[in-house]
Image (cartoon, rainbow, N blue to C red; front, side, top):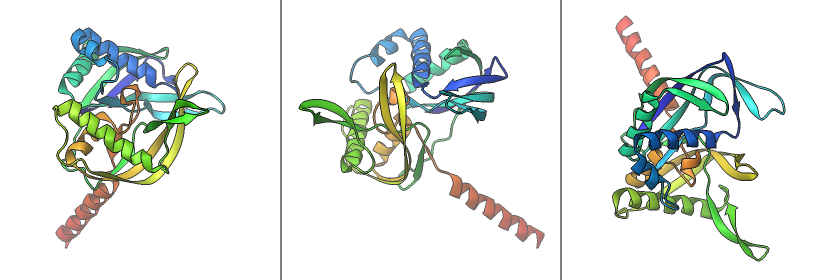
Length: 262
């Protein structure tokens, strides 16, 4: 289940810090806790897949100022939320609608609209674009001690870890491992990003354009709950790139109009 959440700002112009994911995470957990305390407790269990994710915060209009840790937004603000668990969607969305006044990083907003989004029937073979960057990590010996190491799309392990992570989420969601379990990812474009997820704690992640193929169940879990790790902190949300499809439909409509004119 995927949603577009539009917010009207209290001020005509508003600031959006680049390191803002933890503020949206707090909003999600607060609304869920208010609507369903038992679900909130389950989501706070360590190491269990949370099975939801969200995009970076965006604005209808943006302007950037040099060397500032934020951009200036104008018009409505918005972000996308996605989960593979209807119970999570119900609690969060109901919490937003019943209490539409929202404060994020010191800016005040009012929820204008929550819209459920179309989900493609087929995902294998499609091209995806990240709405929040992907995190993939492993453990390596650094200076004689095991340390978390962020992988890059040039590391073969990057893709195997994504596949294993999807299998873990699928198993947590369905209670059984997938029958197939094969997933192939071809990265078409990669751009590194660095975020401060907590004071003094930084995370390297990747904005990607990629084509994925393989097990539809696993790809569906990635589409709904996020690819890679740390999805509940605001990483790994993707959308299907529909540009070519829209272009073909537009061209088809033009041909149909030409036929009618003839």
